[in-house]
Structure formats: C-alpha cells, structure tokens
Length: 201
Ligand code: ADP
Image (cartoon, rainbow, N blue to C red; front, side):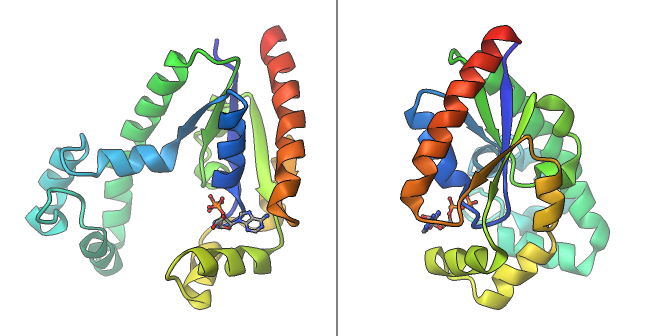
C-alpha cells in the first residue's frame, strides 16, 4: 500500500513551497487543487457534467469553467455549491487515488488545502502534516502573491478552520513562520522519517 502524507495548511501558509521541497527530495506530490483545475480546464472531465447541471452560462468561450459566473450562481443559490462539490469532489478523489497508486516513490505527499474541513481525506492518509504560520503572515503573503486585498484574504481564511483546529489534527507541524530557507531542513527531516515509516507500513 502506498504511504500517503496529507499536507495541509491555510491559504498562504506555504503548502506549495513545502510541496516543492518534498518533490525535489524525490517524493511524488499529488495536488488536489491542480487536479481540480485540470478537471475544469477546457476539455476537462468535469466540464460535461457541470454544463449539464448548471447550463452553458458557467462555461466560458474556451470551454473552461467560468469561475466568476459559478461564484455568482453560488451566491444566488446556496445549494449550487453543494451540487458543484457533489460533481467535483468524487472526481478529484478518484484522480488523486489513481495518481497516488501509480507513484513509484517511497511515499506520496497529497496536498489538500481543506483536509481538516473536508473530513473525507483524513481516512485516506497515513499521516497529516500541517504547514503553520501566524495568520497575519498568511494575509501578507497572499496579498504579496496575488491581486487579493487584505479583506478578501481574511474572508477566505474565515471560511477555513482556524489555526488551532488545524494544529489539533497535525501529526507533524512544519513551522513556516520564519524565512523561506528555514523550510528546507524541516522538510528534509520529515522526508527521512516518512521513508522510514513507509518502509515498515
Ligand atoms: P499556499 O500554497 O499554502 O497557499 P504558498 O506556498 O503559495 O502558500 O505561499 C504563499 C506565498 O508566500 C508565495 O508567494 C510564497 O512564495 C510565499 N512564501 C511562502 N513561504 C514564505 C516564507 N517563509 N517567507 C516569505 N515568503 C513565503
């Protein structure tokens, strides 16, 4: 059986940065956000069922999911979010399972931004690693990397579980409250442990 480490953390905490380091060390990284994007890109497998459920108006001229149009629908009709997730989540899980099973590395890092919130992933991973930093740092990093305002960043964070709830389910905590350079030694130490754990699992 593949040894799977669930990697999570709030928006802007540094999940992608940590995942890149794991990948450089030789771990297979399966990113559920990347899978969601591929499924909803032009020609993606989720486009046909999404079009059938919500109509042409949520598909853009390129044939991709029109996120702004979908957001407006969800805003106007709360059940639309659950219906969209009902289409996407099983497809994301199936693709994540497929990629994890195909991995040839000692272990797999499964990046799940909402691992704590979505419950279903907890039982699919052998270990939960949380990337942690102070909430104000998350806001600053999100603002620096994107066009989101502080209010928008805080609104996204408010919809996610808080720092303590995430830390409460962590088997391993990656402290990203310092310099980016401080991530590498922590990831290297975890990489060695995960190889050992995978060997005896
Ligand atoms: P996530 O994937 O959790 O949303 P990212 O890894 O994309 O977070 O990090 C958010 C932003 O902050 C990125 O632009 C990243 O380069 C930057 N960043 C991550 N960790 C640090 C750090 N320790 N110091 C400074 N910037 C960082």
